Image (tube, rainbow, N blue to C red; front, side):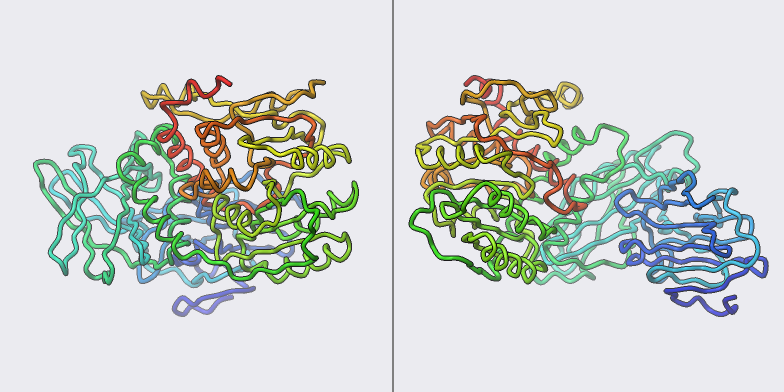
Length: 582
């Protein structure tokens, strides 16, 4: 078993016996963010599994019985400042695991976990594992704000572009009036919005009998050359009373990671109200403008790392297919091969733009192989970061050879030879001022996309007190119909759309103010119509769509979708009631 010495960082297997003495597993902030796990085995049987899920803000606990997993238990817990670099403490005793709370309070995590006898501890990642010592508060120690308030900050993230801070306050008797940002070196004090979230860990600590949004957070810009010691965040109480609580140790993130962190937080919050409604309110209150400015600053650092071309330019090229890749390189070869099934590729060009710079070596290798095997002209552009759907497609169009552009997702493939022939026929015939979309199918033959329309979300609109719009697909999930005539529709999906390069450039391409692949296609269609063109759906362009399979999932996606929906609604909301009239 582990010797009874000071806590040490462990990664691997260790023999333990909790009959000799209780142990503590201490998690640093990095350990929680990196998904560190702790498993206890009795022989070959897993009797206790513990892991922190940072997107859900809590620990998941489980065991195995007879080779299968038991019933999962989830324990909400926000990262906190416990001690020097420690964010959470789990006590391990023969009677079961316990979560340590302020003031020495311990919350049992399940008596079903039998931790008696000789065990083997397997640690994946960095956990401080050793004998129990006096319990420190897993929540940042609160500061008293008069007789009725207590507050603490327990997470501070800073980048070169701004800061994010979160904590909690017990303001049930004296509601929080606001926050202020203090730049001590400049002697400036600026008001900040105070956003609220639910904190189950604080509810447990305060023994609150009713759910309450004790959590507070805010974010803002930092002047160039700002030093962390210059930062102060003050809570404003009734009658203007002001108190500055101690800030925790900071976490530094570069600009792109900081933006992703903020988006993950926006989409992963626990609230007492409806998430979309509250997010719109928070974005309107100033967080939207902050994210927009941060996005612009990150966008200024975008660049092309490499551009590699395989296969000669073809004077007979009629269509350049632009495809954006993120996280999964396999789709380059797969997409080219699916078109090659139905004939020569001498009238096509494939332009792949990668938002994952770490994949560029394998993409160049696969492009060279696919070009040789299928006789295709393939261009690979690797960007220096995840630049989003809009920017990556705009880059792809800029380097494409043909006058007609096809925007296509990596998980969209022609159903048959007729689909490819019809796509080339439409491209060769010229699109003029119109944009044309294809008809997409699920693998079972049901309709995935037959054009898009705009609809207010009845429930969310009622809660928000104003229309909140969404984009819907005609006949999504329904059996196919025999109609084959092209028709005008309000919008088509960016999973497959054809457009003349001249029109694309004239309207400014995809709007890069959107983030990460939601609503950009509808926005482009509305701008085409605003410029005097039409949006058409041509069922002869029949393609399979393995929806959601074409890119790696990221924690920031939910927040990006909320932000883009807010931006789309604020930009087009006043016109969308008439936008379905085509």
